[in-house]
Length: 415
Image (cartoon, rainbow, N blue to C red; front, side, top):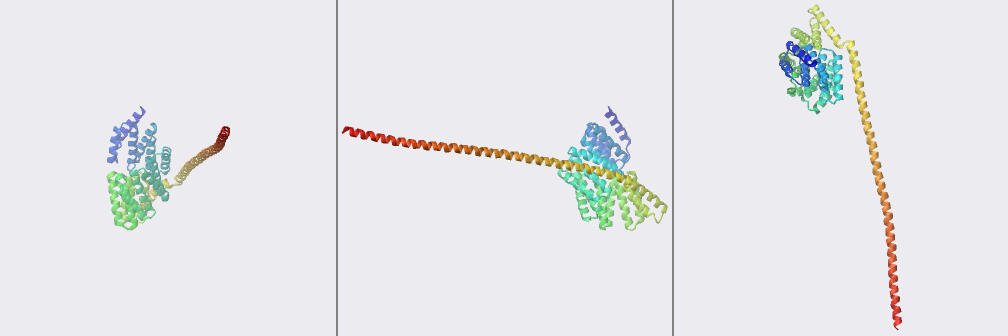
């Protein structure tokens, strides 16, 4: 009864939630109204959570929390881990890194406890996203490479594509153009397996071309990315691309174009609660307006400062550090438990080996002892045979002698 009421409520709110939808969202909402199986309903709600994070974070959180509640009610652990992962991305995009990490660590524990390799790889990738936003690029690279190994082993093409995409972005941030281009091209080759990353691929490729000094190609790739975001109502990625395009126009001394795209970057960021995009564009606007409109410059400086504090303020940093420390301790406990288990196996193996060696030694000893007894018996038998043989020979000799004496006696008697 409770589940029926909850599901009815979902359908009612879904009917109202028509703004900022794309074709995929429409398809998922139609699917939600017809799905019968509880676990399938969790998957659809989780997909809606993911899809709405680009355009409407309130709807993303709503569907994510509904998916999480359903998964927990029916004890669907894989669905719970998957939903936690997706919901964490929404909070990360909003700049709530402590909440994002909290959800990811919960998903990782469920995945590890139940050997959900697909979900574990997703956890590692999404933790990589957070560390990327925190500018800990080397840590993020390690997480994506580990996830890539798992996804490759289980043949998860979508996961492989996402890892390639983000490794390209990370190596661009690390000013390693060749590595960045290598992974970006590999990601483009895998685009059919995860088409949602198209806009980001164009943005990263634009960043790479800009870093290499090819501004014309950079603009072309940025514009291609913007076309994709407009088609999908993807305000999150459009905010990111607009800010990068604005930075490029500022670099080539075209302030009007830079202001135009920076303003669009702030607007798109606000529509998707994408604080990173707002921060990048607001910082640019504060600099661009500095000499022409001090009031506007101050306005955007305040916006940038407020967003930066909410993203990287001391409170957030302390919470994140505490969570990371706790998770590292948990992982260390897991490693220690694995080591202890392996040592026990080695001990059992050694004890078993010694036991087998003891049994073999006993068998050899018994066989050797039996051989010795057999040899003694054989020698005794041989000795007896020789004695008997000697006696027989002696008896035969005596018989011959007796016969001879009898013959001589008879001979002398006849005479």
